[in-house]
Image (spheres, rainbow, N blue to C red):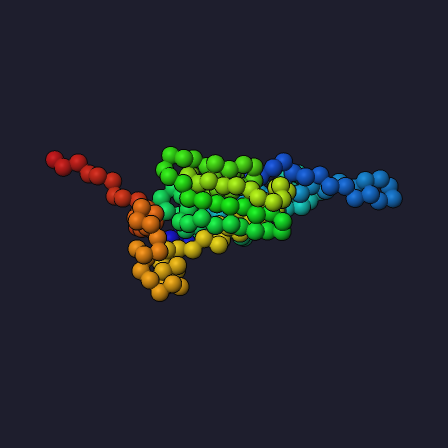
Length: 188
């Protein structure tokens, strides 16, 4: 695919509302805000960022900049992922499974926002372990980063792509890699 282009990215989406944390000092409490932001182009690129500041807009801005720095590409087969995977971060574990077209994003909370921003339209997701939204978000990102392309799996096993990947998934993956089909033209 083409190199990352900021013009293709959507604005950063907050995963949950910004957290307010307080530091108790001699004169009272000092408040800070922390925002978890996801940025994606809806076409297989996504990044997660965490921003902290004294004001909410600044924390969101910092989180968005951090997310843009952490962009990566997700191997997709049509509108789903290539194979099942479990992402782990801390005590949070997130299971992602490919789904048939038309299933939709079956996920909750932090995982749903990330999967939608990545452009994954059909996936089954289950959060296992911790319910902390920051760790669930990072576990989801770890799962997406752990996805391997069919040719990588085949090379590691010393087999052909057809032997290690189901036919429909492999066909959808190859169509996605080839890019959009050219528009039909009228014949006079």
